Image (cartoon, rainbow, N blue to C red; front, top):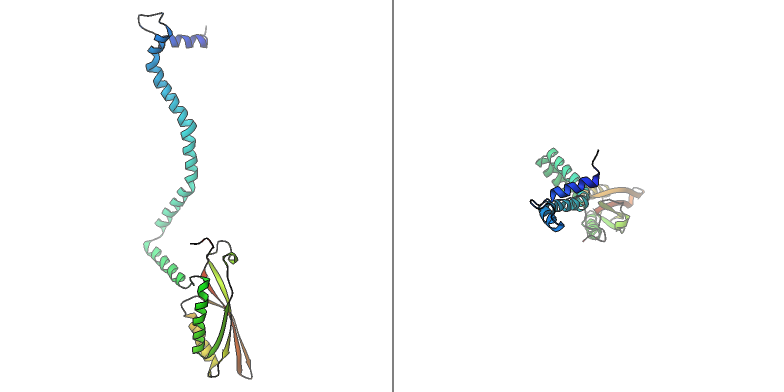
Amino acid sequence: MKTKPPDALKNFWLMLTEVPGWPDAPAWARLKRALPVLVPCAGMLFFAVWYFAIHAPRVRIETEAALPLIALEDEIAMLQLATSEQQVAELNERAASASRQLLDSPAEAAAFLKGLKKEAADRGFDATLISSEVSADSAPEGALVSFIPVRGKLVVGPGNTEPFVNLLALLDRFASAGKRIDLMRLAVRADDQKWQAIEVNFRLVCPVVHEKTP
């Protein structure tokens, strides 16, 4: 006949708490006898509850939160293995060169256009250059640069006897001004082989400056 669970537990308790030479020992004596076993078991039970109920879930949450950083670190390591130091140096030089071609901010456009007007005057043109205001909100989301539209008018001065040659020289000077200038439109108004005015539209480039940018 199978032993009932209560009887089995009772027998196990009696065996665990048996006091040699004292078969009918009271409960306090039996409990004192069992303490060397019960205390470590209680400690292990407490540790198991703390580990599975508190520590393990916290570690799992922290690990899941760090997964994007781990993936980014792995990607950086792969890029470092796939790219040589020479290529990195070349990319840095190209980035620095492109950065030098940008205006520092839209506020720099006025001073830059003033220099272009002087270049035009030196080649016999009276220049009027007007830039449009650009805000960070006008740039597409995620854009790193913004464009400053400029519309201008060049009037041939009285001493400019070769406007075509001087215009080409002025455009070459614009191209070598050290800043990026995108020519969008160029129109020449002439009457009876006499140049009346030259209309020009171009744009300058500067980094996107947000209101929260320090």
